[in-house]
Amino acid sequence: MKKNNYLLRMVTLAMFVALGVVISPILRIEGMCPMAHLINITCAVFLGPAYAFVCALLIGIIRMLIMGIPPLALTGAIFGATLSGIFYKLSKGKIIAAVLGEIIGTGIIGSIVSYPVMTYLWGKEGLTWFFYTPTFICGTLIGGSIAFLLLLKLQQAGVLTKIQSSLRNTDPTDDKKDKVA
Image (cartoon, rainbow, N blue to C red; front, side):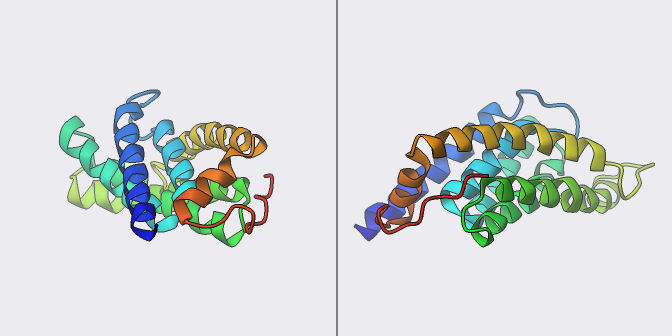
């Protein structure tokens, strides 16, 4: 059973990565990729912070290699995905905490980290430390809102707990119900 659970998590992670690469061009403008935030939050809630980090990292690398996206594909994803999972876990299952983790991780931390990466590694000139903050926050608010509504509907239908239980190899009757928002 444990091996099957690991395989299910790997397949789920692969599906999130594939979906993230395919839908990332939707609503995308320079410095803002709302669909990536939808994937980050959903993956964090389904699989946890470590898997969300790996998912965001893989999506970013693939987007950089295939689509020619600058390193913003990484700086604008990995911090938010990880914090989304951490906040969700610390809040004991509050969806709004996962969204807040994405907003803080990407909108603030990721946007600030983007400045030295884009200036010193990518050679962009005329940037400030908070240059990317407005667009990153807007992107996280759009993607986070969509993720919040999706996960809330899954939670209300009783599906979210079942998905999480199957991925974490736990008995859904032992888990406390996820807290709404």
